[in-house]
Amino acid sequence: MIIRDAIADNAAEACEVIRASITELCIADHRHDPDIVARWLASKTPANVAARAASDRSSLLVAVENDAVLAVGGVKDDGEITLNDVAPKARFRGVSAALLKSLEARAVERGAREITLLSTETAHRFYLSRGYRDLGPSPGKFGAAVSYPMRKMLGPEAR
Ligand SMILES: CC(C)(COP(=O)(O)OP(=O)(O)OC[C@H]1O[C@@H](n2cnc3c(N)ncnc32)[C@H](O)[C@@H]1OP(=O)(O)O)[C@@H](O)C(=O)NCCC(=O)NCCS
Image 1 (tube, protein in one colour):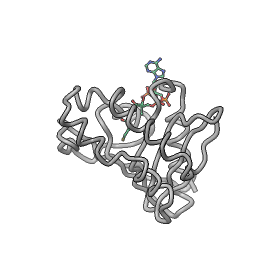
Image 2 (cartoon, rainbow, N blue to C red):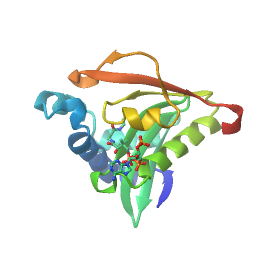
Image 3 (cartoon, protein in one colour):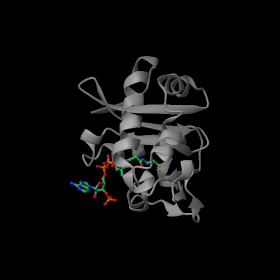
C-alpha cells in the first residue's frame, strides 16, 4: 500500500470509497436514517472530490493498493482534517492509522501546530487512542445525535 496525493483521475473511485464508508461503516451515527444519510452524502460527488484534490490550501491523500483506492483523507493547511474514510473491505488493516499519520505529517509540513477534526461516533475511539482529545460535545452533523470536536497538539518531535 502507498499513500499519495489524489489526482483528478482518482475522483470517481475515491468518491465511492467515501460514500461506502459513510453508508456502511458510520451506522452508529446515522442509524440507517435515510434523511441523515441523504444529507451526509449530498456533497460527496466526484466533482467535489476532484475540487478538493485540486485545492492549493488543502491536501487530499489516497491510500492505494494494486491500483485500488482503499482510503481517502483530507487536511487543510491549517491542520483541520476534513475527511478520513476507508473502504469497508479494507477496514481494520491499519489503513486509516497509516493515512492519519500521513495527514498529520502533511499538516506539519504546511506549518500547522495542531490538528483539529470533528469525529463521528464511529471513529471516536480510533482518535482517542491516537492522542486526540475532546474539546466538548457538539450537535451531530447532518442530523446525527452527536459529533466530537477533537484536537491534537503537535510537539517538536512531530516537526
Ligand atoms: C474507525 C475507522 C476510522 C478506523 O479505520 P480503520 O482503517 O478500520 O482502522 P485501522 O485498522 O487503521 O485501526 C485500527 C482500529 O481498529 C481496531 N481493530 C483492528 N482490527 C480489528 C478487528 N478485527 N475488529 C475490531 N476492531 C479492530 C484497532 O484496535 C484500532 O482501534 P483502536 O486503536 O481505537 O483500538 C474506520 O473503520 C471507520 O469506521 N471509518 C468510518 C468513517 C469515519 O467515521 N471516519 C472518520 C471521520 S472524522
